[in-house]
Image: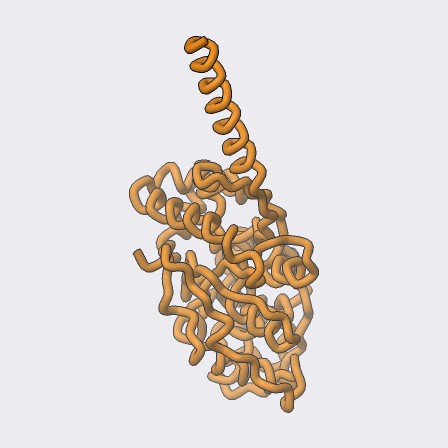
Length: 315
């Protein structure tokens, strides 16, 4: 009798363990990610090393060619979370979407750059007047473009803007369809590699230090804690395992390890709580209004409510 009871207890314990494991494995989210950019390197490492699985979270990475398109999928309920720059989040807030930035996992003041063709008369930003510019409209690249124009004293009416997807900027500048492009890495590198000495490049620098963020709707907050923890583990792994991290990212982007290595130090792969602030969002909001992306009388969103960092990022 005692033996039967012991067996029953063991079977019951195994059943509970099985149920708990099944429940853990059942927790799943869809993550909209720009899979063409160095800015998402932390995501690629977390995915490859299984850091989310270790947290009991199954993450389906849904690919996009820009953070803005990933965020569009988020507001359309096509994904549960997305990676995007702060400007894309601001635009969503102006359209009354209650999105939240819960983590910033990479920053760079060289990620976005101006690339011009010398043989088209572009040697400096001051040469942009009457030039044809290819840029993904409604993104941080357009914000940087307007910053260059303003610093050079060139009205936007004095340039022709061509709306292109980030990957399409490369072909456009190489063919000579446009004189200048504003886009991000690795598209800048790809264009430089083909144009060689004809290319001239100016990083965004003081105009914009791009943060790449995890963005969600508040209702997904509990599950997203595990997503952010996995990214935090990836940041630590990247710090201690540079070579392997570069190999992971190069494979994900379809670039050689040498190319990724050359771009690596242009980024700060850290969980940062200081780059995106209510003040920076207010400054960017002025640009959103001045460019007519939203009407000037559009009410301000609650800037501070757009930022809701997880405690894991400040440990």
